Image (tube, rainbow, N blue to C red; front, side, top):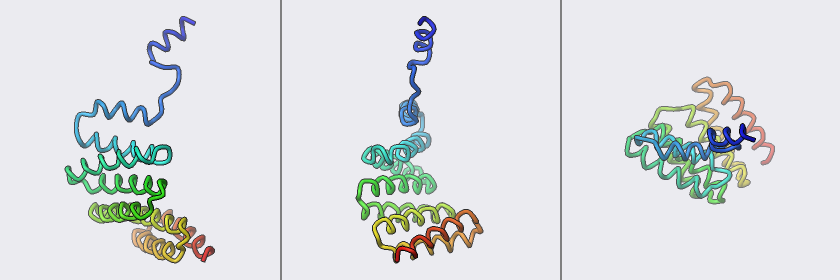
Length: 169
């Protein structure tokens, strides 16, 4: 028992902490806005399925910091996290606005792969809502980008998702 008591004193707990707990601890000591924004966005993504409301709050804080720093890459990632959490919350119209912002900032960052990834999430959202025509339209836009940048994994994903969407029409 002395060993476990010593272990508890050294480690602080016999149970591992969640990633979210570790990120929150790191956030408390983060010294500059760039690190704070990155940690906030990681918290937003980490909590998107378990606590969508907190996820949206973290994403909003990260967006504000990234906008202040004029960091389009960080900004699109935070809008994507926010949009995903909004979808989970059943707020698809708000999610679409956040995805539009994410796509705007992927273009500003010049990240075609990220743009295609965001389009895939938008198309999936439309498919989940039963709007397969819109889903096919958006998947096709993403496929065009994947073909342009010759990203074979993205091409395969878009072709597969298009096939699924066409099966549902």
